[in-house]
Amino acid sequence: MTLDLRDVRCFVAVAETGSFKHAAERLEMSQSALSQTLTKLETELNAALFVKGVRRSSTLTSTGYVFFEEGRKLLQHAALIETIVAERSSSAPLRVNGIPSVFAGLVPDLIRRFRIRQGTATIQLAAEPEGLVADTINSGRAEIAFTRTTRWGPEFHCTELAAERLYAALPSDHPLAEHSTIDLSSMSDEPFVLFSRGESSRHYDAIIDACEASGFTPRVGSIAHDDLSTWSTIAAGIGVTLMPYLSTRHMFEKVVYRPLTQAFTTPLCLVTHAETTHPMIPQFISATREVIAEMSNQSEGITPVE
Image (cartoon, rainbow, N blue to C red):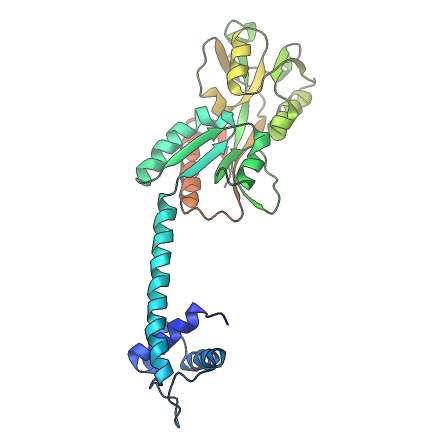
């Protein structure tokens, strides 16, 4: 036999009020539904909890008195457990993971705002390649992660946040750096600094698609595995690349960013596991949307997705 707390709560309400009518009002249910619930409870216990009469009596039997005392203790303990779990959940750290390109341009402002609102919030940050995000979320090493992948399996929940425009990232002494805007086709003969497709397939495809739409396939001159190595390679004058708007908010010596005349974009999303119940996730997503909306008012580089 497995007791249902809702059934116990119905019984205790009748015992405390001494009335089926008043108990039904407290529980916001009909008297007939309450009567059926208690009949089922007596059947499951194989014991009479109320004295039988012409009409349904709220007088307890000796077994009913025992069940009333123990039932009240059970409900009190259940309420205590709920309180403890809620307190610990609200104080549990929110582990935020994701692609390095987001960390420089978005995360500092976002976390400052989020912590002002959630004064007790503890945030743990870790950046890693796109290709590891799914495993990180699936294994429970992070509750939420930034990603550029829009298609996920049913075990994940993905929130699409924005479309980021791609910018040309160039050595500061490159001839194209003298232009205020750049037609992507003018970079067709340049060696590109790229990453392997497995590290971020969606963003990689966005770069390749943009180049091909401009009439060329980029020539890979160097492979870089993160933004820092990409910036360093460009600063050394070894190559050029395309970077999303948020990456351009990071100033790196001897690297300049120029908007393209074409509006090529790459998506920005937040992903969680479908079964994740961390109480701060909705507030985190809301704060992220607000920061992005403010950025979009200041720049054409990012457009919110509603």
